[in-house]
Amino acid sequence: MNNIQLIVKNLKKTFNRRLVFDKLSFEVRAGERLVITGKNGSGKSTLIKILAGVMNESSGSFEYIFDSGKIDREDIYKIIGLVSPYLVLYDEFSAFENLKLFAKIRNLKIDDDKINQILEKAGLFNRRNDLVRTYSSGMKQRVKYASAILHDPLVLLLDEPTSNLDIEGKDFVDELVQNFRKDGIVVVATNETQDFKYGQRIINLDDYKNNQSK
Amino acid sequence: MKTRYYIGGFIIVVFLGLLFYNFTRTNIEYESDFTQVMAKGKTCKATGVWVKEKSFQEDVQNRTFIFYLRDAKNNEMKVIYRGIKPNNFEIASNVVVTGKYENGVFHATDVLTKCPSKYEGQNINTSGS
Amino acid sequence: MKRAYYIFYKDFSSELRMRFALNALIMFVIVAVSTILFSLANEKVNQNVYAGMFWVVVFFSAMSGLSRTFVSEEERGTTLILSLIANPISIFIGKFLFNLVLLFFINTIIAFLYMILFQDFSIQNWDSFLLAFILGNIGIAGSSTIIAAIISKANVKGTLYPVLAFPVLLPLILMLIEITKSAMEGNPISDVEAELMVLISYDIIMITASVLVFDIIWRD
Image: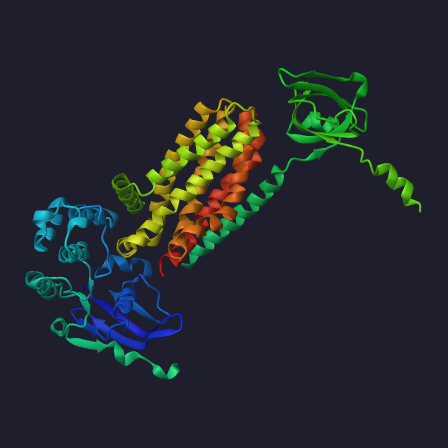
C-alpha cells in the first residue's frame, strides 16, 4: 500500500534577520490537496522551495514519510514535481530535448513515445522540436508541467499554477490536478482566489509571522 | 549519511599525511659529501671548492663549462654545466652546484658561487674592539 | 554514475550549441601563446622558463573557462531545475567530468602549440610528462569545479575565482613545474616519484573533500 505523508513541524525560515515564517506546522496525507496563500512576500515560494528540498530551513523540520519510512533529504527530488514561475528550463534545447534529458538524468525508463504523449497532453506537440528560447511564457509554463509529471511523482508542488496560462492552459491544469494520483499530495501556493478550488484546506502564511520576536 | 563523512574524513587525513610526507621529500637536499652525491645519483645541491690546479674548460659556442670540485674530505668530482661561466667564478670561496651525478660526471643545471664578502676581513679586525 | 554521465552529456551538448566556455578559452590560449612567442622571438631562454610558462597558461585558461560551469547555470536561473532532477553528488561528478574533458581538450592544444612554436620545449621523458599532465588536469578540474560551485553562490563572481583558486592550486602548479622540468631534462621517472605522489594525494584529497562539502554548498 503506497502511503505518502508530509509532516511539517515548527518550520521557521529567516533571511539574515528578517523572519519569513515561524512555528509552521501541518500534516498532509495521501490524497489531500493543500492550498497555501498569503500576501506578496509572505514566503509562499520560500516554503515551496524548502518543501522541494532545494533550500534549507532555518529551524524546525519537515519530512516525507512513505510506507512508514522517512525519505532521505537527497532522495526528495525523486518523488516531487515542481512548477513555478522562477523555474527556468534549458532554453538552448527544444521541449522534447529538455524532457528527454531530464528522463535520462533521472534514470527513468521512458521511451520517446511516452515523452511525445506527455507533450501532446500539455498541448506542445506541434512545436516540440523548437528551441524553448522561442516559446512564449505560457508555453514555457506548459513545458514545466510536462517536466514535473514526467517521472510520475507522488507530490506535486505548484507555485502560482495558472500564471501566464490561457483558458485552455488553465483547463489543462484543472484536469491535471483533478486526475493526479489519488495516493499523492498536491500543494498549491497561490494568491488567485480562483485557484483556491484546488485545495480542500487553506493555510495562510500571514498567520505565521511571530511579530513579538522582533 | 554519517558514515560517508567518516570514510571521507579518513581518506582525507591519510592522503594529507602522504601529501606532506612527499612534499618534504621534494625539497632538493644539500650535500657536502661527494661520496654521498655519487652513491645516491639523485638530484641534489652539492657544495664544494673549485680545484684551481685543474683549471676549467669553457666552450662558449656550445655553452658548456667544465670544472672540478673538491669537498671537505678531498673527494674530487668533475662537473659539466650547460651554460656560461658565472662572473665571479675565479674568486669564489665556495661553489654550490645543483644537478645529478651520472656516469662519473656531475651534470649541473645551476651553478651558484659564494664570494668572500668584502666586509669579511673588516669584521675580524673590528670584532676585537 | 549514469546520472552523472547524462549531466555531463547535457553540459557537453549545451556547450556545443552555446560555446559558453570554449570560445573564451581558445581566444585566451591564442593570445597568451602568441604574446609569449613574440616577446621571446629568437631569444635563447632557460628550459625551466618554458616549463613555468606552460603551466601558467594552463592555470589561467582554467581560471577563465572552468568557472563558467556553475556560474552560467546560476546566471540563467537553471540551478533550480538541475537540483530538482538530480542529487548533488551526480551533479558534482557530471560537472567535474565536463570540466575535465574541457581541460584535456584545451591543454592538449596548449601543449601542441608549445611543441611546434618553441623548439626548446622538448619533452625527453614522455612517461613522467604525460603522467603529470593527466594527474595535473584531474587536480585542476577537481578544484576548479568546487571553487566554481562556491563562487556561483557569491555576489562578486568575476574577481573571486582567481583569489580562491590561487592558494588551492599553488602546490599543484609547483609540483607540475618540477616534473615538467625534470621531464624536459630527460631524467628518469623515479626522480620525480615524490612529486607524483604529491599529485596523486592532492587529487584524491580534492575530490573526496569536494564530494563531501558539495551538497552543503549546493543547497542555499
